[in-house]
Length: 310
Ligand SMILES: [Zn+2]
Image (cartoon, rainbow, N blue to C red; front, side, top):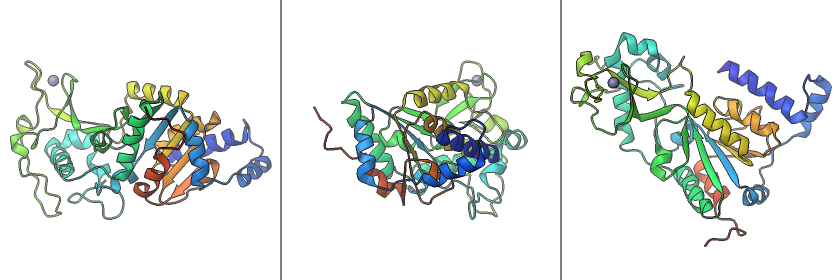
């Protein structure tokens, strides 16, 4: 996390000022000159001309649908937070406990729905595609709410709660079963005094490929694991062609936007942030719209008067 923050700040400030080795005075002047605009009419002018829009989304978008992240103050499942359980080591030590955690998260999603931000993004993609314009969503969220809202062009850089991967043969499969296996039925309660279900490995979710029967794991990127190179390549390609970038529900100094927004900005492409608060990086981008993205995005992505609908 710190690495990304540091890298992003450095890259962004260099990119914005056009400096390789920075002279601190010049850089300071440059940064002070840059102030983001919160003028929606100006954003809408840029939006109306954009042909390839990349939308990077983070936890804030899911939070507005009431999706728990198990991170930060109060974000506990039993005695643990995501960083304690979403690791290869935790799964190797106690696959039953980790599966209970993910089973709970899958089941919670049955009662969660896309919010106006997800819907505005999906509707924008559908509308613009009829005009020969593209929208891609690059998300760290694993809850599939973008998919549920109707987003088609979706790059899930952290995978999905509703995909499994075989620890034996590597097969990746969609899986929407509830419960995911009989032994997990009724398990996964989040209360701190709940006992581990201690399910034997052979009763945990198993690979259904012919003759494999390997232990399945959630197809999500855990702490300490690398992002899927195939997904990263696809992200790079999209960022190379986008002519407008939105950063929604995550700040531009925090991963994953910190990895991506600087390279977009370096090409002189407008970046617009939609999140609750300003951050040190906010000043380096063209636009910043504070507040819940469920309120700001529908206005930002609504049909522009110049759009011709066939
Ligand atoms: Zn398998």
